[in-house]
Image (tube, rainbow, N blue to C red; front, side):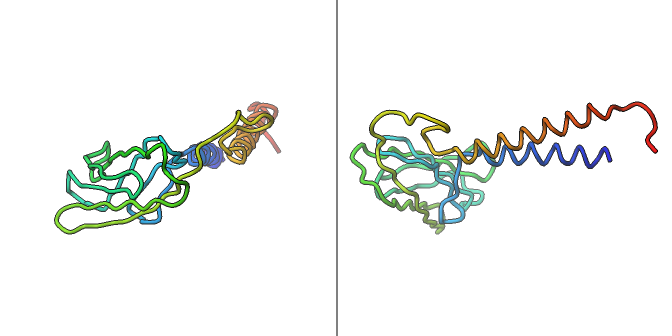
Length: 159
């Protein structure tokens, strides 16, 4: 029984962390491109497609050329480019090349530049309301489970 409760706690924690992860995979499969790319922002690109290589080159249709260097994890190359302030909303294709002949392509969406004030009311201005609601629900479930456990107590033999 104790293992089941521990497993449930671990599942709740892992689920909460998975929901809060901000990186979205691009269509290329081996490329990850940071989300919510508005004109004037820096975009981070990472890939595992280059294998043991420690250097690569990249090119964004909207942001131009950039270099890929070793990241924090072994076998991962990371690079950055800046979207111009006048980048048009739509889809941007990113192409990465590594020696000897590795070439992978991914796409990401360039959003409109935010305008006006911050949204008021329930939720935040970036559209994460569903994630926050689910996180709150998971937290409430954990609290309720703890309350039931405390209420039952650990004394006495049950029949």
